[in-house]
Image (cartoon, rainbow, N blue to C red; front, side):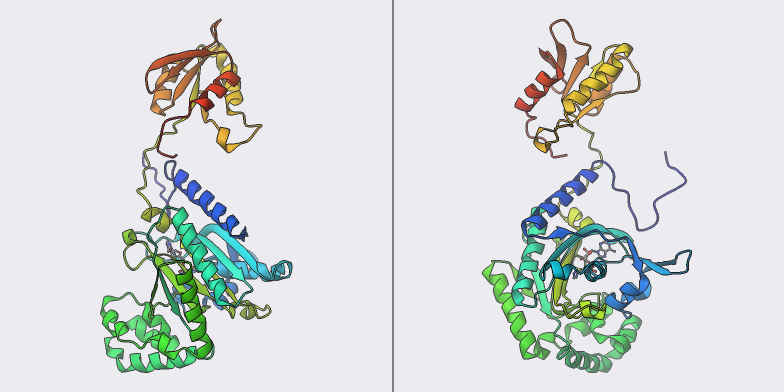
Length: 432
Ligand code: HAM
């Protein structure tokens, strides 16, 4: 049943069977965030273009090539958000969140947009989980953030997480490093790709992030940032590493790690999943001590991360689209005149007035007006555990175990069936 319309290039539909996994990932994320005291912020999907130009950085690939920018009817330049940090900082300043809590702990879950070349794990609309901690400058904040990052990944089912960490230095020592890099790469410029020669003029640090194979040997020989750190930055980085060790977080120092956004200072980190290949981080983040001031606020150190949800889901299991709905019960109307009773019986079984996830039964009805045997066939197709028939016989409602193909004791009412079902939970079943 192909239609003449298809999803736009680089985007995808999340269908039943997969959407349940998304739902579980969002629930486990919200749970972990809340245990660490992080609270959700939901910002608009588009913002003033200038917000991203000024934060992510004019010379970055994201701003130069990947923004979805449009003018609205009043000719304002707006951009679909390519990332979540700048919008969170904008909201933090706009609503003075730092006054309510000088250690503002915020998180978000939502779609981001980048006009990238689509490939496995790289989309033009993708989802991120992100957290930001605004206020503290001390290394313990970096350690908390990386610990939270690992807890989210672990709660989603990713084991054996090794975090790559680096320090980019600050306004004192980074210019020194940038100059050293410029000298080194200028001497090697014939071996660099066209983009990197351009980067040599705008920001030689960007070259370290180049994925073109012929640039890799040149990058491998580049001077390490760690040799250029000033004393305060070195002490900060050593303290972060010591803190990670103290918490038992497995880490690897990666002196050539840089990230595609310009707002970072000092600590940078990333995690990879073996299923994604070495180039695709499942998530990453870092410190951005200057960004709040650059966006017009008071000097406020901050640190955060984002995790790509598609990448996390790809690395924690196969995507199975063929899952049926699997209700606990299908209510079967034995004759057309019992249709309303079937709907009412189903509603009683669902017991939605008293919402409690533990007691939630999934109950479905075939509303198409077909006869009882067709309704039963449909119940088998959606892999229902039980079918219950209305109206009742004089001694109760017949109940059929659909998977075992046998009849159970009749039930007097929806309430008694509900109690009975809760006492007879389904045997181990793939989570849905
Ligand atoms: P980022 O490294 O640009 O950082 O993105 C974070 C994660 O988003 C990546 O590691 C990846 O998993 C996912 N991601 C990025 N682009 C794509 C894409 N085109 N398709 C699929 N997944 C993608 C940031 O966005 C920063 N805001 C992180 C941060 C928060 N730093 C401080 N606070």
